[in-house]
Length: 382
Image (tube, rainbow, N blue to C red; front, side, top):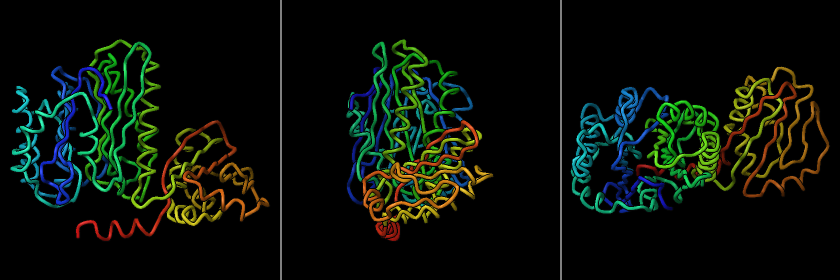
């Protein structure tokens, strides 16, 4: 896809992955970028997360981000801190940036292995030479167990655009788990506004995403603007939410070994926060995920998950629907289990929850639990 005005992107094969796949990516702007950051809440975090947070706190702009895949560079001690800094320094120097801090960093892959900075150094000339207006090579370079790239674009009135690029397939759960998301825009939105908008967008999208209940060490979602074109703020906010929502759905659909996307839509909660909690809990239930894989309309598992979400105090008027078919309404509802089971074999399964307690709404996304998930993770480092 084409990157927004003011950006360049590249991706090359450095040799960090034994597979020989593309593994080093760069997003760059010659002009300073306004930006916002959300990152993992895991106490165990990679140096790239800590470094980016420090830069974020400074309030200073950046010129882009360099990303490696195949190695998380996490739990590697003091060496890992310096290796992360060296990766930034090597690329920043090649770009003739005055400060190494002007370039953010991100890593993804296996935890506990030293980063091969010499390999990155050797590949840097090719990386900077490959910079261009197409994002596809970058989107490929950030993948790990993903089955394909994840990109979403939106056009804004007045000619502006938003491009979202993400990776993520496993070790994913609310609180920014093992996903990297980079959202680029040429909309002229100042940094303060970006930082006001971004947490709310992440809360409604990436933090409503769950694959396996594990929160990773390297997750981050970075929003960057080259501030090229004036746009309506409300239109930008709507476009940003739409891009992030679709990226979250793509990550859930590509969950390791997944065969079905699960969308859980909660309405009638006492607040949006409670609706989101209800949807997250149901989407993350291993028993619900297993039932979806087996096309089993076992609404009791959904009700049990809903009951422990903290969002329901009275079950008398709660309604549950599967694929738009009512299966529970405060009591058992008669339905054709065989016919509904066939509906549950679709690529996307919709679970609707009406909590009948207020006006709060929320959605969450997940995937079914398959034997392939176990195979992928049993063989991950071997």
